[in-house]
Length: 170
Image (cartoon, rainbow, N blue to C red; front, top):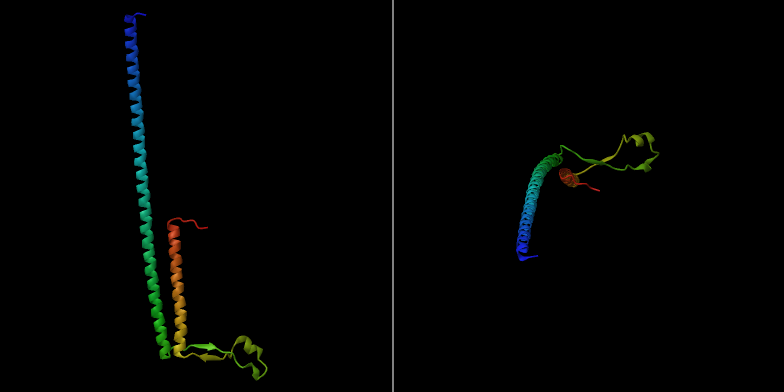
């Protein structure tokens, strides 16, 4: 082959290689640009979903907080009402308006027992409590009632949170 035929052929091959390389570069750049657009879209969608999920959780937190505050207010009202009733009861016991008594065992040695009277407790012997003892017993009962109210409020709060956040317990 002569150099005159060889040069145009080499020039054509070189031009073809350059054109192919350029075309391949354009396709590669287009693919990269498409991947970048898809990544940006995915990132935007993920950010939107995160923002929506965060808003849902914040809404749930606010609602749960408000419900818990309402339950705490209700507990405070219940405790205040119970204390008022207990104070009124103590005053009635001290003034003698209310008398407390407890049953006491009667002496069974006095003779044959009447089964009818024993079964019906018609003539039950009772002992009256003094005001201080009645107040002490009522204070014990009041403390128990307060603890029961607090425990109920705690259980209500637990159930509220479990239902609000759809927590599954085992």
